[in-house]
Length: 287
Ligand SMILES: [Zn+2]
Image (tube, rainbow, N blue to C red; front, side):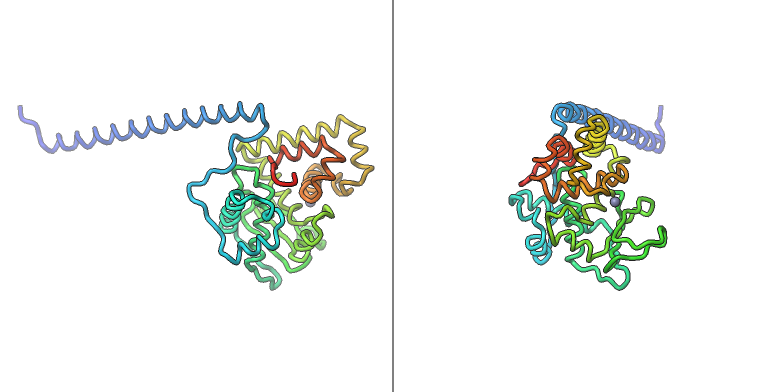
């Protein structure tokens, strides 16, 4: 019997495609199994430690220009206190974050390297204990020179996070004011990024978001249950009164207070302090 060379050729192609498909499916299946095993291992680890199994893993590390690094070194205390390895991770994260967001200057404000580096460094400080530091809820960062009139609320604002527009808005003079006095528990950049990170964690399912939200819920439950602690917190005025507006402001003011005065926080309200440290996985010099 004679075989038709054309049909033999087509048969070979179909067979190759089928084998290829099977290999791809098997690889996807193996990858899924490995990922679920690793997830399971990490969940077990997190169950006992309340921390992710690891935070930093980069195939390639980006870095800032020399002048951008100078801005960090001279103007960002948190960065200065890190060891060389963590400083390198931090520069990678600031670079990545800076490149992935759209910065827009309003009312004649010019976006300079200083603006981009300091705003990104604020975000990267808060998420430095997170593996996923991208804060996807923020796509645009809008900066005004000074406080601006919000058409939405018909009042002047120093900053806001608009979840619907994926936009974080800051007034530059107030942002700098936040860092001018580093222990007055007022920091606009930290406050607004706290809102963005909170919102982001509600909608994401990565390990840090889960720890962040679960631990914040524990903190809320603690304050609801322990009236003595809650009263002490309110009457001490250690947290400014605005914190008690709602849960979102509570979280933002707590993070401002935690970052700026960790020692006082730890001494006065250790239970709350350690919850916040766990939420952020914040195990860095002075914390
Ligand atoms: Zn707020």
